[in-house]
Amino acid sequence: MLKDGSLLETISINGPYNFDLVLDRLSLDRLNHVDIAERSVKVPLVFDQKPMVAHVKAVGTIDQPKFIISGIEDSFRERAIERVTAIFQWNIPLESIHRHFQQTDLRTLFEQHYGTPLVLEFDPYSCLLKCIIHQQLNLSFAHTLTERFVHTFGFEKDGIWFYPLPERVAELKVEQLRELQFSGRKAEYVIGIAKEAASGHLNFEQLKDGSNQEVYDQLIKLRGVGPWTVQNFLMFGFGRQNLFPYADIGIQNAIKKRYELEAKPTFEEMEQLSKDWAPYLSYASLYLWRSIE
Image 1 (tube, rainbow, N blue to C red):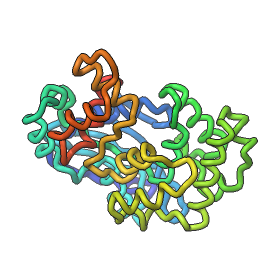
Image 2: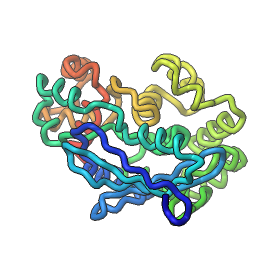
Image 3: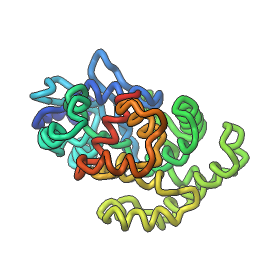
Image 4: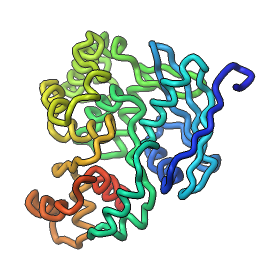
């Protein structure tokens, strides 16, 4: 326990786990407070509408990972540890996944990015909003637009920015998002999803226990949500392990580069290439993205 009454927790997990590569990928999003030299990241969490910032610092190695978590009030200890564990996927045995890919044509890629986990967005609601904002945009402007959105309508605690809560976004007008360079349609989508979440019709806590198909069936009904959005949400919102978004331009480009194709791969080519990667298609997707980031 620290002087301010917050929790100081030490967690050891099974390796391999490359937290330095985790931080490298998190640093692509300017909203994330990452310290590469200190090997740490500050994670915004909200419990019972109370915001707090968990400070996660690596003190171990790839093969013997160990972390110190601070900044959490003792009354939220159990929930905070559970959420941080889920975000960083500390409960997923990466060694078995690595062994699986040693028998595939992605072997060298998995050696290069050894121990890279499928890290989640910090909460499912912001994950879905981020997926919507990023649709059909190049990555640089997508991050810029998301940053504008959070800085304008979100809130700050201890120097860390939090996405605006659903109740706040539900009250916005399309014109307010248009001023940030949202398209009119994308602004409608973001506000519509916030209204569904604020009303309780879209309940992420209930949704997380559903099958991929059940999650798909509910989310696809939302305006602006297509198959690409659902697949990305399932991966980075809920950590589902066996998804391969064929329509993703980044994955298409990564496959084109890796297999030295003259043109982007067809659906049939991607299906053929990926059949040996199951049941860990999400990790194949992640490592292919990493190969071009």
